[in-house]
Length: 337
Ligand code: FE2
Image 1: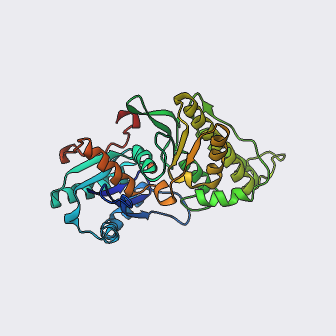
Image 2: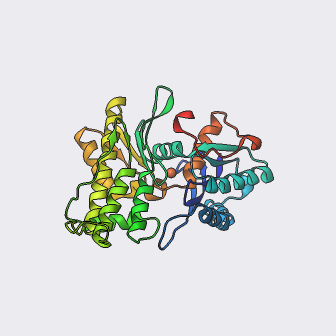
Image 3: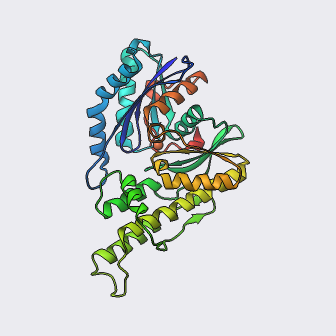
């Protein structure tokens, strides 16, 4: 079975993946990713949606070419129904509905967050992991427990990637900011204390963002800061930001592992591409005799392949999404699936 997917993620990526259960040497036949980027400044949802419209046809054609199949070979069409930013989800949903109607293929709407967990299980040796899902829009610790997907910890305000991107914008680097922040952090030497905000199993980033922006501005604009304010280096701020927020994420992930008795940690989401976060997770897992699984980059970031694969799993369980019930669900929670 091949599942064609139109996947419009919450913010910045339009992807088309093709998956199958029939190939012994790999279930992912295509994974085309078109990412919206800026040279400076952040992301504006309406502009990202325009980008998605522009690349839609091209992405579908490229995916079919990569898989060496035609639309008639596709059995089902799945799409990310939520969560995410409405502007962007709407484009993927509209394209999927169109393909479904024109080519008379069943439509399956899937949950974006759970697709990160299931693609990780497909492509690594993880059997029953705790997923640390860290992206721009989302920050969740998820696992399948007692018959359903559950959230064991999450952000109380913004996603960690969104917070990093907002700081990146403040210091004048483009979108996405994560890779640049990682480079600057590698040149940081001095740890500057930032708020460490873990509340029970949850985390919060808003206060940290405000605090680090104030520190940056005090060192670079000077006017609002008292004369005694130290001149913080950009590199040290990036280093301190990473060390602080990644320690928070590792702490809640570890607690979820202890609570569920699971000994596998899987990473997902664009922020999981950060090698410092991977290193900190690896150390934590080694210390508790657990295994860490990190899918390759194209399957960590938002991608059509994961929506495609979860579409197949849902279809095999009997899920069908009628066109009239295929409205996007921007606030669809993992534990409502
Ligand atoms: Fe995602």
